[in-house]
Every structure is written in structure tokens, then in C-alpha cells.
Amino acid sequence: MDQLALLFVLLLGAVVSVPVGERFGLPAPVLMTLLGIVLALLEFVPNVEIPPDLILPLLLPPLLYAAVRRTSWRQFAANLRPIFLLAVALVFITTFCVAAVAHAIVPGLPLAAAVALGALVAPPDPVAATAVAGQLGLPRRLVSILEGEGLFNDVTAIVLYHVAIAAAVSGDFTAWEAGLDLVLSAVVALAVGLALGWGAYKLMDLLGDATLQIGLSLLVPYASYVLAEELHGSGVLAVLVTAMFLAEYATDADDVMTRLAGHTFWDIVDTLVTGVAFGLIGLELHIAVRTASGRWQEMLGWAATVVGVVVVVRLLWLLPATWLTKRLHAKRDIEEEIPVSWRETVVMWWSGMRGVASVALALAIPLETDAGDPFPDRNEIIFIAFGVIMATLVAQGLTLPWLVKRLGVRADSEREAEFEKQLAVRAAKAAKRRLKEIEAVEELPEELSEQMLRRAFEIGMRISPDMGEDERREAHQQRVRRLKRVRRIQGEMLSAARHEVLAARSEPGADPEVVDRVLRHLDVRSLR
Image 1: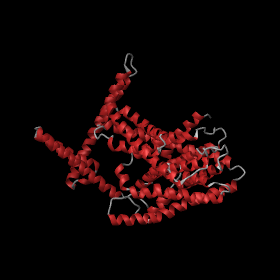
Image 2 (image 1 turned 120 degrees about the horizontal axis):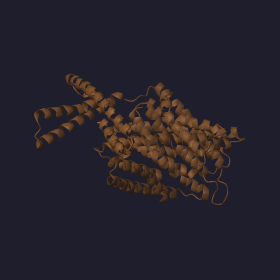
Image 3 (image 1 turned 60 degrees about the vertical axis):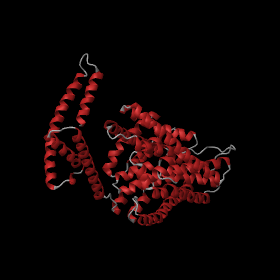
């Protein structure tokens, strides 16, 4: 098996793992990691040869961009405090706790190298957390916090990692320079993210075509990441800012086709890239196995200790942080997504799985220092990092569904239904207002006016059938049944038309482009 065949196997696994995971109640990223481990143990499967410095630029931008499309700037701003406590404060605390323990238990491990280890195992993986949380039907408030934490903790951790690596390689470190680097990295990322977001927004208006706009949306996160890194900023933060800008301003309510096609496209990208990323985690296991050759007992002890630190620190931080957030939330009476019980706090604690970023940072540790000496304890750091990744991703990922079910943590379906009903009412009222505006400038027959008024009401009823009274709901249901019958018949008619047009494609003298254009027209008509 060569590298290309291995990539095909990972892509196929990414597609198959989704229905398999849904069937058995297991997260698809965890299944892909297990697939990677199995492949790594097969002798005929080659070792993956991806330069470590390319893993983050290749995998993170599309994954982050896809994740941001599921959130919004206002949701992030509303949850700024809990996200800050997790994505910034907890990353710092975890980094330095791991560094202190690793420096104490690993003989000869310099403090700077220990901080690098702490930084690369500190951030929970945004893709794993959101993928797992999305499949388990958790309350929206928990998913929002996990998404926010996952999106922003990499920023803090990667900057800490680079500062620690620079100190270990050069042998020189000052706290104020590290703090200045952190601030400058964020400022550069914000500037690049906003500039590219604005530029992409204007260019999308210029392009117009849905295919070209979606193609541009794939290039933008890569451009944002690379440009920010070239200017010594945070590529991760730049991608987040660009994606949030486009999600906020580059959305046309009437551009239905671009929105539907873009949603499908990014679902596909998210599924495939996520599968490949977590498959690579399992495939890279051979590096850790080779590193521990002959020293299994000692190195497993170090890895287990660091795993314990990572897991315990998260719990000990979440308990008081959640309590404090609740107190401040109650006093200020603001809209903020917070855990409402100890059960939800426990689920948040157990959702802290490490993944793609940790693997990439571990493999990107330099081989030598500036003095030409081997990087101190590089093999030991890589093994411990993989131990943390495997323990948190596989062990926590496989047991999280059981824990959620055991604790009875479920989404607040009544609240979601009520919000959906409110949106349905607002949509129906907006349609009625627009109808009145049209009637003010156009003379509509009474029959047509009444028909349009019913259509305005049905806009809301189709979203939330509970918004109407019993009589109107029953009348609506009768119309829906009649409409379904009409659409069924119309669908069969359109199907016959599509089969006839498609058959013409193979006839002598038929122009395939003309056939495809007519077929697209029929396809769009079928969506209405």
C-alpha cells in the first residue's frame, strides 16, 4: 500500500464512520482514531510522511472555518466570560501545572521544554469536542461553550508553545518578551483576519456565481492562516476572525442557492478533513511506539502522571469557575450560556479531549537547538504527548456517551421548541407586513389578497405547527395534506421530465451542455 492508497482508505473511513458511529452511539472522530491505530499496526501499511510543519496549515483552517459557520459573533460575545475562563485561563493553568510536574518527574527535562509539553497538551481539540457534543444531543448552552473553548484555546496554546520552543532552542527567555509576543501575535491576527474578511466579502459580491463564491470560501481560511503566520501573528486567530466576519456580513438572505450549496459543500469538507485528521492521529502512533522501545514502564508512568494532571486540573478548575460564573450571572442578569447543574459541569469536564493540534505541535518540535545539540528530551515529550492524546481522545471519547446517558444530561427541547415557535411567528409577521406594503402600491384582487394572507400564515405554520389555534391548525393540516398530494404528483411529473431529458444526453447529435443546463433548470424547479 502506498501513501495515495492510504489517503483513499482514510477518506473512505471518514465517510463510513459517520453512519457507523450513529448506529452504535460512538463519536466518528474516535472511530477514525481507532482505524488509524489498526492501520498503524499492519505491516503492509506505510508510515505517514507528512512534514510536521504542514499538518496544522493543511488541516486546521478548513476545520476552524467549518466550525465557525455553526456559531456567530453575538453568541461568542454573550459567552465571553466562560469562554475566557476555559480558552485562556485554563490553558495557562494546565500548561504550567503540566510543566511543573513533567520537570519534576522526567530527569534532566529543562523547564522551557516542559512548558512546551504543557502547551501542546493543554488545549482540548475543537473538532473532537464539537463533533462528539453534536452527536449526543447535549444542551445548546454546553455545546456553545465547548465550541467557543475549542475555537479559541488553540490560539493561547500555540503562542505559548512557540515561546517555549524558542526559549528551549535559544536558551534565552524573558517573561515580558513572551507577553509582548502574545499581544503582538493577537494584534497581527486581528488585523489580517479583518482585512481578508473584508476583501473576501467584496470579492464575493464581484464574483456573483455560487460556484465561484464557494470556491473562494475554501481558499480564504488558508490565505488568512498563512498570511498571519508569515507576519508572525496567530494563524488560528486570523482564521477565526475572518470566518466570523464573513458569517456576519457576507450572508445574503435571498441568495438561496449559494447558501444551500455552501452548506452542503462545507459539510462534506468538514466530514472528510475531520476523518483524515483523526486517522492521522492513530497512524502517527508508530512514532510513540518507536520512541518507547525498551523503556515502556518508565515512560508509561510519566505519561499516566501527565494524563492525571491534565484531567484533574480541568475538573478542579471547572468547579469553582462554574460557581463563580453562576454568581456573576445571577447578579448581572445577562444572557449567558452556563452549566446549570453539577451534572453538566461533569460532562464539560469529561469532554476535554486532545487531538489534531496536540499531534501537530508534538511532531513539530525541532530536532536540534541553535547550538547544534539535540532538542532536550524530544522523544520523551512526544511519547508523553501521544499518551495524553490517546487517553483523552479514545478513553474519554468512548465513555462520554455512556456518561451523558448515565447523568441524564439532555438538550432542553421545550426551550428550543419555544424559540422555534417565536421565530415562526416573526417570519409570518414579516411576510404579512411585506404583503401590506405591496397592497399599498398595487391593487390586488380580493381573492388573491386572501390567498397571499393564508400563505403568509402558512410560512410560520410550516416552521412551527404549534403557533396557530386548533381550528386554524386543523385547516392548515388539511391544506398541507392536499399540498403534499399536489407535490407528490408534481414530483412524479418532474421526475418523468428529468428522465426524458437525461435520456436525450446519449442521443446522436445531442449537446451535453444544453442537456445539463435544462436538467439544472428542472432540478431547481424541484426544490420549490
